Length: 79
Image 1 (tube, rainbow, N blue to C red):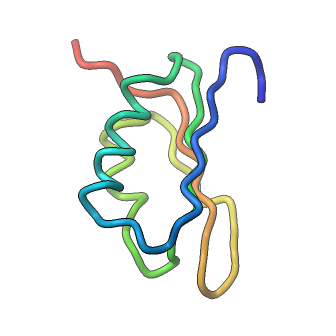
Image 2: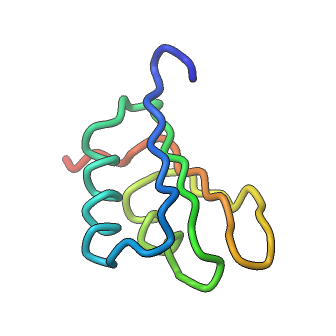
């Protein structure tokens, strides 16, 4: 990871939706303005949709039939 980035990785498939929502919110709040959140998610769960309200750039990097890797960068700061 670069000096100005903190990487957050969620590798647990059985995390409750509340905890995942808390992880997304905390990552957006705690990361540097150029920071990146890396999220491993079950393919069928819509983790990427809520990230679009918290990060400027959200990309589905890849994965397989069960999991996918999501990259969310540049947290949006409330004004």
